[in-house]
Structure formats: structure tokens, C-alpha cells
Image (cartoon, rainbow, N blue to C red; front, side):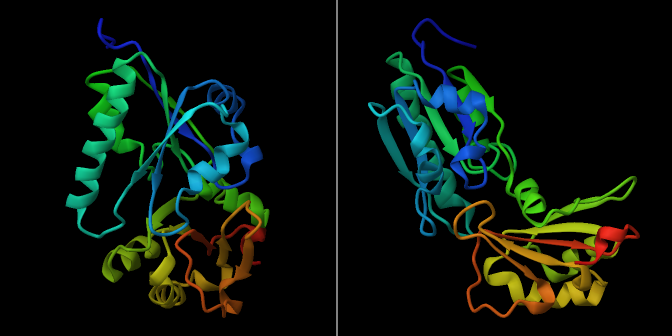
Length: 241
């Protein structure tokens, strides 16, 4: 709820999977006028959200880069989001709207989720949905994620083998995200559960770096974090690449 001292609004803006033309009309309209643009920077593909959104930004906007640690331990990142919230609130209390740029969709494994309560307890927060890497990857290969009454599971690759194996065993269609350094063990698990034959790897979907490879043919040395494996072992005709 807005207080008398707070006049600015935080907009959590999904900027999509990579192609600047895949921002929504609402996102583009807001970014063209908002005076403060905040965005995360990390060790890999630093400030990707900013790169995606740049063609749509208000050129006079103040830019607020925030370093977010990419560590397994949650403590450092949580402390960083405390800092982010305070930096954003300083602008909001001064009457300036702020946009926080988030790759894909803000609430689909997005960094924005950590700001909803931190900022929302003190100032208005609005969320602008974005196209996810999952749907972008499906569009890139021209294949449905699932059909009719089939289940689709979204599985983060860092999950342990036992969990991934059990989840894969119970679903005909799955999307493996956050693959990166987990690629080799995930590929072995997909072969074990029968998903490998219908699996396709999509790297950097919708960008100039996009690459599509059948899992069976994948021989690249890179293990990019921004890759998705779409796999299927259902009964539909499109199941085999």
C-alpha cells in the first residue's frame, strides 16, 4: 500500500528470453519513460537483461547496476537483495519510478521474486510478465511442450540424481533448465529414463547465439548456463526430432 512518503512504483519487468523484439508492448512502453532502470549483474552473461532491454530504454534514465553473487550458498545473494531493496526504495521515496529488469518472466525462476516482499512492504510493486526461455525454446524447435492430458515437468538440472530420476520416470514430457555444468549427468539420466531419443538442446534461445542440437548429436565442449533441454517420450507423432 502506498504511503504519504512514497510516490514511486517499482515495476518488475520481464524482458523475455533474449530477442529485444520479444518484449511485450506494455514492457516497452514503461521502459521508454521510467526514470530509473535497475538490473542484476552476475559473473556469466553479465547484465544480459540490460542488453535485451536497451533498445527500449529511456535514454535519460539513471542506471542502477546491482551485483548478485552466483553462489550455491543462499546467504550472499539474500544479503545482496537486501541492498537492492534499499537502493530502490531510496528512489521510490524520492518520487521516482523504478524498473527492475528480469530475463524471461519475473516470477518464473526470476530474480524479481526476491524484491516482491522486500519492497512491497513499503511501496507499490507492479509486475509485467515476460516470455519465458521455456516457451521460447519450444518456439525455436517448432514443437509443442506437451499435448492433451500429458504432464509437463520443469526440472532444474542442479537437483540431485535421485530426484531427477524419479520425476522423469513419472512424466512423458520435461524441460530441463539451468543445465550448464550438469549437462553430462543429465544426459545420462535422460538415457536411463527413456527421454533421450526425443530430447533437443536449445542454447541461448532467440538470440544471435541460438543453437539447436539433438541430444544424441550434442558434442560441443561448452556447457552454457542459458540452455534448455526439451525432452519427450509420449505418444504424439511430433515426439521424435
